Image (cartoon, rainbow, N blue to C red):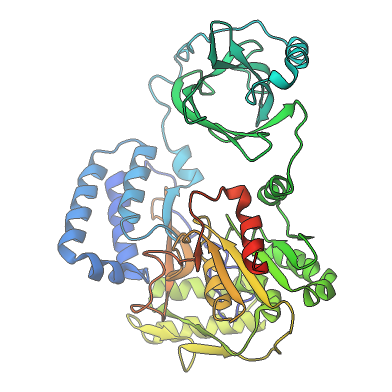
Length: 491
């Protein structure tokens, strides 16, 4: 989300619900539609783009389904389907605790659960598998071994009657539905080296699956998630090691890739991550200022606060950096939201007074757009141009939205910066999300109060932010960092 002058992420506001009463889907639908139409900053934008006839058609179809939805979760699906006609992010609706508590137990809730399918079993212990692997030696198939993912530890072995077919047999499981010896997956190798077959879910229900070994060491298996080989003991390449560390990281870290390039992983711009990001930058400031190239990896980010990436800007700066601000939709509900933010910060604080001023200005001009500043753009020229790093590559993908995208927009104004990866999620045009509770207390609606001044000329929500260098399918994800390093180093 974007915050203007507010240096903490907006908290979600819950309006007081009425006393408990049965949840009624048609009433919830009508409340959601009227609330969203009257207060969301992006409503009219999408209606103008798609057309009023399409909006009317969509709304009537969803209203008809809502009238037939007696179940809380089925109703929630209908409500969200109506909402996501507008955009993918900064939007949503879900049942509250009160709403869930109001749902009567289903007629069949006391019935015995349906028996799970009986799994096929293979007699295999981990000790036996280790002996088999030792005997096979270099003749071991790359798929054979002990693998783990989540609650499961499996041994993958060839089937006795067909050397191209493999069983993934449970060795140990934290899921009580699975016992040692039961077959978790059946795979057959294809001519292209990949595998197809059947994967048995947590309840033993069968699902088709495709699987493939990842990386040069063959120590990772993509099969409804990434499985890690435990035996034979993996020998990860540098690319694999960095990829695994990066994807598992919950905090930022910096690592040297070579004499000319540093790698900075930032998994989140959440406001609570700001001290951690700043700490990594402070500890490595001299190293960053003395190294030719810097890679910043923000894949699968969480959004968060613009303040979290402020410490990165000096390393990217090559001249005045222009950014475009937002305008707020002035309504009573949105004014009440800013009043609540003032209470959250404290009305006698700088942020609290600013929020109260916004609330007052909204109430003075309902139905209009509130401009937060005299001009809709700003220019950051408060930095000096550092000789190093000379080149900065930022890695992004479809998992980046909101604040991540705002960072990319600002960063790419630098002559030092190139973006690598895939187009981003596209959830930035409308922001500053607010949550309110339905009058019956059953549902919580999230909508957005602000719209970017980039619109309508430069939308992000439709296509996301496009990278300068698209990394095609011929470059596996775990090799992205190495590829970017080679580009920056001119190799």
